[in-house]
Amino acid sequence: MMARRHAPPLYEHITQGVRIRVRPKFMHDESEPSRGRFMWSYTVDVENESDQAWTIVRRHWQIVDAQGRMQAVDGEGVIGQTPTLQPGERFSYTSGAPLAAPSGMMSGTYDLQDESGFEIVATIPVFSLDSPYDTSLPS
Image (cartoon, rainbow, N blue to C red; front, side, top):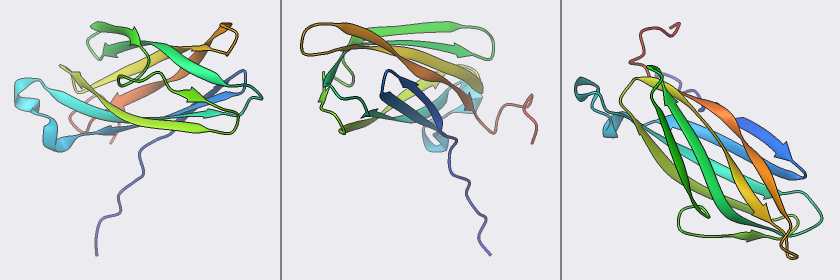
């Protein structure tokens, strides 16, 4: 009998009709716990449920590991793109985050701009980065 794999947890937040879902996943093959390198991938879905088009113009991430070390990541767009989502459209991408500790948290925001130049700040939900190497987590 094969062991059942659990689906990674899903985190979600809606800001003014823009739904952001994040699904993190620990990357066993790319991690080296003996060297203090723990790697996660995370898939982000941005879905425009509003009645106007939005362009992702900037991203802001905060990554905190279990030892309290913080990294900030700011930049234009996402994965080298500034996608525009028309009403009803969705944009998905996968990226990665390395940590020097076996667990941590990520959160952030996207600056979204409509066709007139008006901007809103959409919340990326806080999500946990938990690995099987974190001995402080319940098993």
